[in-house]
Amino acid sequence: MANLDFYAAADDLRELFRFLFGETDIVVYESSSEHNLPVRQFRSLPALEEVIALGNYRAAYLQLWSPSVMVEPVIRRIDMAGLPQSPHRYSVEGAGLMQLYLSGIQEGVIHHTHFGHWSEAGARQSSIHPAGDCNWRELSKLSGQVQRHIRNKMACAKLHARPVLRHAYTSVQEGAALWFGPEVHGATSAGIVPSSAA
Image (cartoon, rainbow, N blue to C red):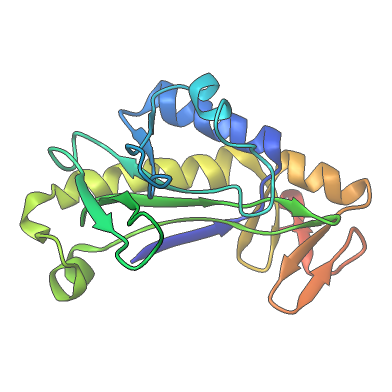
């Protein structure tokens, strides 16, 4: 799998979604719907922000679909038998989807956001969905475009290997901290290295 964990504040995530919606063919879906409701998709930042509070801790789990990678995502109904009134929900799935798990600040500590997806080899070995339905070359190209934008255009520091995006870094300078495993890193932490010093 290709993975990138990074630290982002609300304004960083807004900039990232402006890039995704404006410069790629990505359509954003929630990973799973609320009970008894259809799954929601988002094609603009305003539509996304009507539903998701960007910059909050564990704000959302999202699936990123590109029509250049796969024809359409799989929308699977999940019936929750045994619960009152037997509710159901819908899950968005597919071997060629990219995941974006949004996180943010909680009690002054910024938690990492995650971007990732299957590799072709990983999907062929472990995915329940057909790997042959995906254009893996296009997925690699698109993923590289997204990751380069995060690393080279948006980040201004690193905490170990994780990019720290501009607004998150400013928040740290103003008193916030970054969570890394069991440790919390503030402005004076030697682990946070500005890009000019990297």
